[in-house]
Image (cartoon, rainbow, N blue to C red; front, side, top):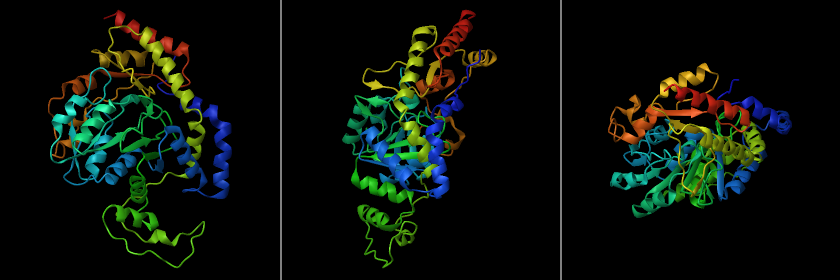
Length: 398
């Protein structure tokens, strides 16, 4: 038997009849940017998460940048985050001119250690960016308490966490801004890049939308006023039509071109209807792993306060390279997320972060031992059993 790491083709077959008529409709009507598919998807996300505002954007990295910009993070500011995450987390911080400050993670669930956050706060700290790594929410009560004490913004990196919950509230509603990725491999994945920013703040929603669309038009003018500037009176005398909005040529902020396209919105809308089912199936596979895998592996231990969406099932092995080679040899897909903690990345060795190369022992150990096993909604119990047997056979020889 062979077990792939992920099987997107099988997922597509399950939604093919839902997606293809919508794609054909978009192609025939030639409404590729914005339009009803995007607005309907944004509204569906608002209802699903229980959040006031959801705004689609080009990708998850842009979502993080937009969140940082909207929260006023800029050159010289510091943002506390984890070193055990995908590069985009810290890259977004550096991209707005701020400095990522890395603190260690917790050994049991791989999330940022709240006990390390407060001691990293300085007079330059502007925000905290917790990452709900592998779909498991961080300890948000503690993080929000620290943020409140020092007047910091909380920008959630929800790239892997859609559908997960902390004390009954969904990821993306736990901080000032939530930032999602719809990269195809995510629990809710598109047919290309896509992202979203969420917030319960009416003002932040205006600013987020302005930054993603060149800071233009009526929304850009309102955002400038909210940020302390003066927009003056905006009146073009020209009519707004379905295809032409003269206000888009009046710009008030230096923003970005970061919009979710209609094709992605259509695919994501179809998948959103099945997301809870997808996540339930992932949880089923995770339970089989937790029950069947050898105790010689270190497995994640999650608090009863959270409901993870099991974006990845990550174990730690002192025989990481050997285990991965053995799994590959025997037809089991696997991954190593993340082999290089961010404070050891060469991109951050030019003095553009804090803690470069410094001792963050739990993150460093986890990075050196982490192995991702296959977990996807269409995976069968038989496939999970084969993965378990293959891993356990490897350890029988150790």
